[in-house]
Length: 240
Ligand SMILES: [Zn+2]
Ligand SMILES: [Zn+2]
Ligand SMILES: [Zn+2]
Ligand SMILES: [Zn+2]
Image (cartoon, rainbow, N blue to C red; front, side, top):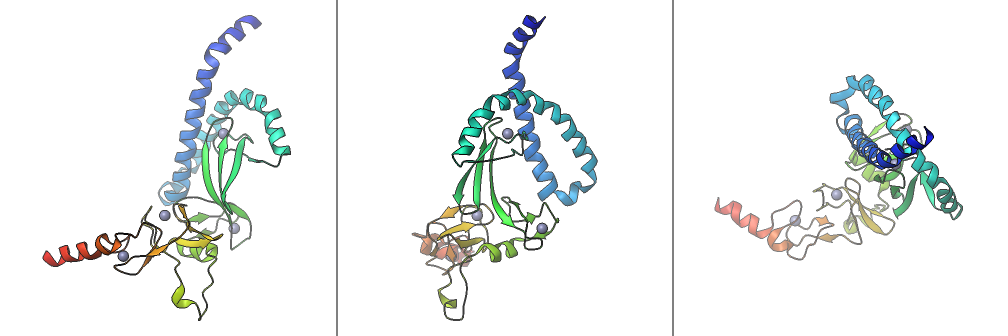
C-alpha cells in the first residue's frame, strides 16, 4: 500500500504541482486586477472570490512538500541576510526579495516561481507600508486609503522645488515606456516612473517642445516625444 502510493506520487506529483502552480499564478494575477484596477466593477463579487481562494488552498497543499524541502536552504540564505517574504501566489514564505532601487523591490518565489515587482510604499494616511504596484494607484492594505498618481508622484519625488531652482526642475517628467504624463520622478539619484517602474539614469528635454522625458531624445526635434509630435508631426498637421 505504501509502495503503491509512492509510485503514484512520483509519476503524477510534478505534473499536479505544475498545474497547481499555474492555476495559483493565474488567479493571483487576475485577483490583483479584480480587486485593484477593476474594483468598482467587481465589488459585489467578494464572496465569490473568497470561495475561489478557499478552493485554491487545496492547490497550495500540493506545493507544501516542495516548500518543506526548501526550508533548510531558505534558512541558510536568511542567515546571510537575504530577505524572504510570503509569496502572493502560493502563500509560502519563499519569495526571495532583491532590491532594484531603494524601495522598489522584486521577488522570485522558490516554490512556485512567481515573479513579483512592487514599491514598498508608506501610506500617507496611516504610515503603514504596503505594496504599490504598477498602474499608478495605491490602495492601502491597512486603512484602505486610495492614493492617486499625482499624490504618489509628490510623495516619492526627491527633487524639492524652491523658488531658486524652479526653472531647473526636470521632474516630474514624462515616461516613454508607458506614455505616463508627469509620472517620472527623481529617486535615489536616478529617475523612476511611478506608473510602470521604469528606471533610467537621466531624463532629457525634447528639442521640439522642451518637455522632459525618460526616452531617447536624440531625434526629438523631428519625431517629437511622448507629449508632442515634433517638427514632422507639426508639418503633417499643417498639411491636413
Ligand atoms: Zn510562490
Ligand atoms: Zn493606510
Ligand atoms: Zn512609465
Ligand atoms: Zn516634445
